[in-house]
Length: 459
Image (cartoon, rainbow, N blue to C red; front, side, top):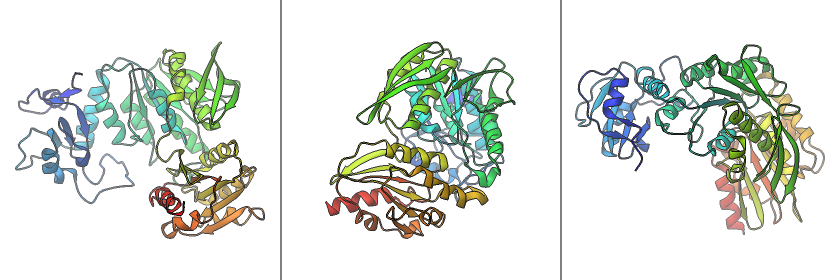
């Protein structure tokens, strides 16, 4: 049986709490009362974020209102801003449960780990790259997309002290957030997967996005390493840099499709390394190179990771495939921006199809600012080899209006009123369909499950 990640007494000491606390084992730290299980530490966060952070999903209720539910589900202790009557398990009282509680415990977790820590960010593909890195033997990585002001500290608090490697994904909702998350994480290696026009509405320019992503280097120690795509400038960092991509020290030498897989040969420094990817979309090759470069920068063995890359699956909403009645549906609906939509289209173009069509169901790409119409129209150049396109949303109307004759399968203005059955009726056996757009377009509305159900009823 593995050792607990904390004891209640250790948490209390780490947060400077007064009083005596038991040595009860803690196996899991969470801020969500619905995820509490026996052996959990429940961190009761405010529904309105403190510390100057912004949340797209702020709650109207505070976490401590669910203290009784957390206790009933098996929590062994909780971090609260004041003592809550009727609770029988230990309560560790701090002034601010986010900054003094969760972040304070995360700092204590990081301070006791002496192994390599890879922090990563990017405009697209960072979660997929994190999953590649997580395949390294005995690595610990954040679950799902735990990359914000509460997800990053939760990752650190739950990370196993005996892991070979910690992998911490970082995202942003506002300027300056990545720097703060990196300074909390203190990575030994900082990886920028890519810089693309995402969050333009908030940051204003591609240069501002680049600066924000590269600010992950602010958490590096003096001897740390910054890992970057070939050609991306990072004059803010004066330390060591490792690069991946064309003509870089980590780059692809050759690839050969093998069914839906790709066989890759890469150069890692002065050594050639062969590995497989399933499925073999081009953007996954770049993500794999980024992961191998980061492993090399962390003084770990890239070959040890490479042999496991073909076992790394696709996460929900990021390219998962289902076959229904001879129709293949690729659910890539978790998010969408110009780079990731282009990558999804490129992957669709590369597929071998017999007797069917390559179809893209595309939803609006959000947060692109004043240039949003142009970014949507520009997708036209990525449609060679795509047989038909169904567009969803007012911004995708700009693309629909310039589609060649016969390529436009349809347009619907509001994703909330789009009936999956309408799209299902346009499909036939042999078709391969990718669904891609910003999260609010298809993911939030559960469009793909509805499409699958409609196709099953039709089969």
